[in-house]
Image (tube, rainbow, N blue to C red):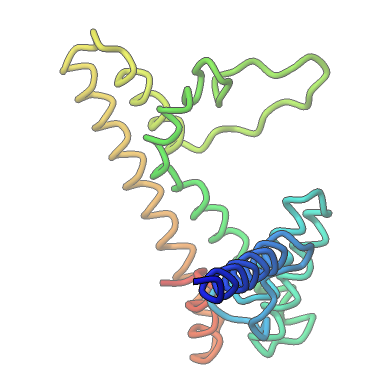
Length: 203
């Protein structure tokens, strides 16, 4: 029995050491770079994740975007001049994709939502703060719907009207995104189109 106790202590020590190494690997700066960091899949390989986490820890977002653009340019096999022509259209597509990002509405609702107690899109800017960027139509309509859903006394007709407004905004945004993706696709080779699909820019 004494031997069994020693074995258990050794096993426990090894397990705790392994967990410590795993946790340190996750929180260490630049961690998660076990993958080769090659471009692709939207920059979600190890190097891209490490850069993203570094940005959230206070790194320079502009520098992170520059690194991602350079990674995308390299993957596309485009010269700097060619990428200068493609970049505005790529960024337009990415912006429209962000504008359509109203799918996290319920999470915002539970956290107070836009205009809620925790300060969302409807909150007044702090004194001296720069004016907030215009809220995309989809997110604005999502916020309107959230406000009604947070009100237990909201009438079904009110909810229906706001739901229809949200769907209409989504349809318009989807149409604009489809056009922007088509315009971009017209400038690409077949290989470049496939690369941007892996980056999540094209469908």
